[in-house]
View 1 (tube, rainbow, N blue to C red):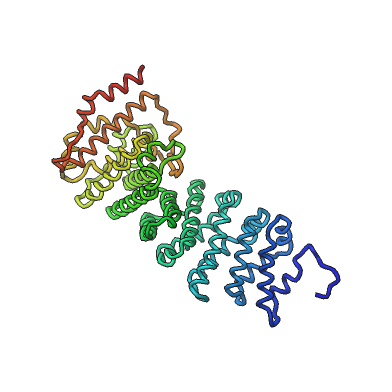
View 2: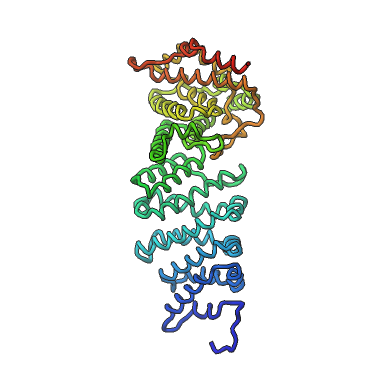
Length: 481
């Protein structure tokens, strides 16, 4: 205070005022924190903060007993500006452990032990905004994906529990809900891009079901649109999960049904989903197509994971040798479905056919769709569906022999949100692709008719009608010419 010169290489009086014990200590601390907030703008400011360990002291002060809610809000506002400066964001994340610090802040202040609900929500909301700004930096996300995703996973794990168990608190705060889902979705996106041997952040089917219920309880409105879109992305980026039991089938049917209704609602004011899915270029796959891939992969993974050890070797051999759907089915069947499980199978089959009807241009996923329908509808207890399929068993086996094993049957297969995984070893001519697609379309007709078998007043287009129309023959002749 009595010095004749000022050291411009540091912030004058910063440590003194932050640790002030004078009568006006609160006003002095708030004044210094406001000065830090106003002064964090340029790269030179960042160097000054880094040189004087300014942010380390601010983080320590935030966690101290003398820090009140107003001071904490100011510290978070300072951090929010600092993470936009490249020099400081690397320093904060890699050297100061900012993500782990944010995780503790969020967990403490969402519980609200030392303040009102409004002040705790403000602190938690600001902390989440800082986290969102961090993961918007490409350099930081690359570093997290490569070496430190566990730090971001710690935040997402707590946020998931908060969303599922205390959804009412978030429903009344749209920005907070959006930030929560943004962090969870970003964590799953980074996890999806990691190497297969690295730790990942994923939810079980039960966890996805709970997430769907938490988001589904929110009333639909324009202001909540972004949060709901993030919720669907989180479910899809989590990747498919093996569907094993009847309970699993019921849960995934509810999740997919909710996702379909939300997708229709999201695009209701723009254009029809059918038009959207048909016009969408391959590089920009529609959400309905992603949902179909996700559902089909979950069913296939569930059946493959339940195959006995004795048959799993034959199954891997058949898929590695680019076998057909028929060879896969011969190794995949182990038991006859019970009556109780048939109802869930019918529901899933109807959903798959409905989605396939809305993504008709997506022929690459047809083998996977057909295989999922085979696993759901064939080899089951007696009913109208089973009787119709038994009568057409010869046609089904003949058509399955023309279709190669889908990508999901390959041990190297991995889920990709943005586009389907393609087997580099699988190479077909255009004529072979067309014949395989025709076989898939024929099986779709058979399965659709099987599900309508109990409805006497429902007109059906039989496979013979399709053959008699000459459509497939015309396609073959056009391809040859």
